[in-house]
Image (cartoon, rainbow, N blue to C red; front, side, top):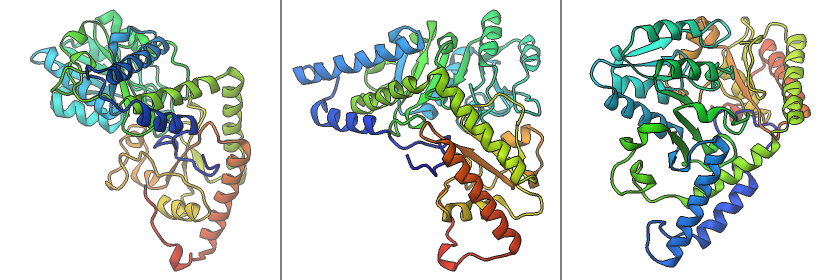
Length: 395
């Protein structure tokens, strides 16, 4: 991965080992796993071995793992199931900072009036008291709180949420798309539903997983058609894609030593310290919160231009960052995450999200600070970019 790529929360490049595995599997085990001939049977056996491996990582039963096209499909399927199985009058509880694939799916299947949002504090962390209060109302069909926020990187109290839900007998869904591949999987298996996406941790796009726990397996259906995935998701299984996902996940889990995690966190903090010293007008969102080791969200100087002008100039210097969630880019709407944290529209218009990866080193963080300083001096001087460089990059 290029050292100047800082948009890993949006997507990551496919790691070399995963790419090679995908090519090998596509050439050798391309048969439909549902076929009755020998080659298809071998592909089926290999696919089930991968299912068992992922189940072991999550500490769940093998038959509870469903391979999907990604977290968006999984999140939609969970919401549809919860609305269908909960009965009349039930509502969904989601945090105010959930990903659009959770928020919009909840509103589609429960209706806007059937969705309750949990407030977050100024650091962007879900308030557990708010959860306790809404559960008292009863008739809750599902609680959905993500593991870590895709914009701020703030780690949510998902273990505590799960414990509260278990005591109340309420199903709990955790969108772990930003967690898997960056943090330990320990404890995730206690969530009734878990969704993940391969392209967030070095796997290919178009493949992910969903854990469907307990009695939900009996009536759960994502896609209808054939009997694949234990009847929970129809469609020919993508063995090469699943293999590539698991190869990438193995690699990331292997990277996750305590020493490596601490080193990555220290490098991010060193970046923040230098930004604070060299660009004192810049504010770090959720600076005091526990965040993913790779994520920093900045509010740029009040006296400067909008974040898009910063992004364009950083891109010209070879640095790829974002102005927020890739799934919201281009809509022109204010960030619901920033809004929930109390930021005004002007502040939202000056936000940059920076998210590194496992290959991001201290020298890359330092180079980004240098680039930010260069852009700031350029903007303050009123220097214009050459016309050929004024190209809005893809968000």
